[in-house]
Length: 137
Image 1 (tube, rainbow, N blue to C red):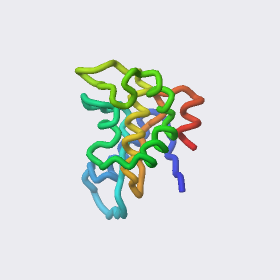
Image 2: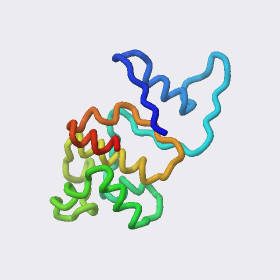
Image 3: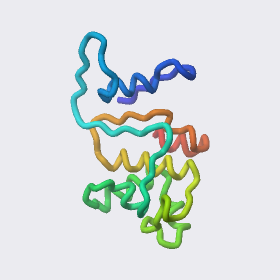
Image 4: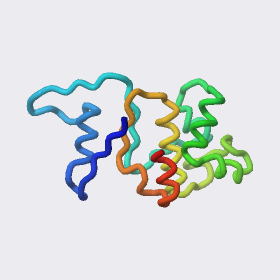
């Protein structure tokens, strides 16, 4: 099931996600979230290191799942262009990536976690309409 929360700037979408993640103290009531969560923030966070490490984020490599995630996040063609593919170093000590590439790596990291619940905060802001449509599917 996919659920989208839409609203104007400042309407509380990010605050709602923070509440679901337990980062905002409750004034009253209760909230129960069952299962593992993967969260994609608005501004991509990339660690200095290889692209592969940014996606795996400490999880063991499962090649088939990894390739599916790369394809789902429209990263395969980007990696073909890079001399060292997913072994390319990015971040402070590596090459610069576009905002869209960083965002797609961040989404790939979330998808690779194989979580029960995925929370995305404005995930398509840095990607073009075609890529955004592909990612949403």
